[in-house]
Length: 195
Image (cartoon, helix red, strand yellow):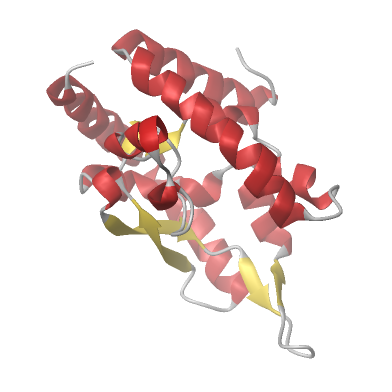
């Protein structure tokens, strides 16, 4: 797909989503503020296209446990994560040109930036809000909780598989392909299964 067409679609789609769902973003942001007792916004440095770093926007879903000082996913935060509503602020990342609607999900340093050989082609992709890999690992948190060593399982099984799925997208990306991924994402959000 031509980069100009993809960028045009990203901007139009993001603006449309913001116009239609800005009220939802405001409501869930307000809920996040009350629930986590913070400003409700979470930002984190991620690895972007061509290894350029940027700050991703999400609604905060983690709260501090006052007695222990540790952090946990809040009650409302768990719902926001399940419905992926905490990802809505990333529409602003798309408008800024840091992300795309469809593309490899951006990760923290220590993963994509360490890829070698052909796998580094994934870094030529603009990070996306949704992807084939994020659809396959929709319940990644639950999957990791079932492992004896979640970090090892992620590094040896999940992440390499995500890289292969993102490489597949890199070599076969198209406008129709992006639309299919978007519709599959909608299917997961509303029906917990692809359409």
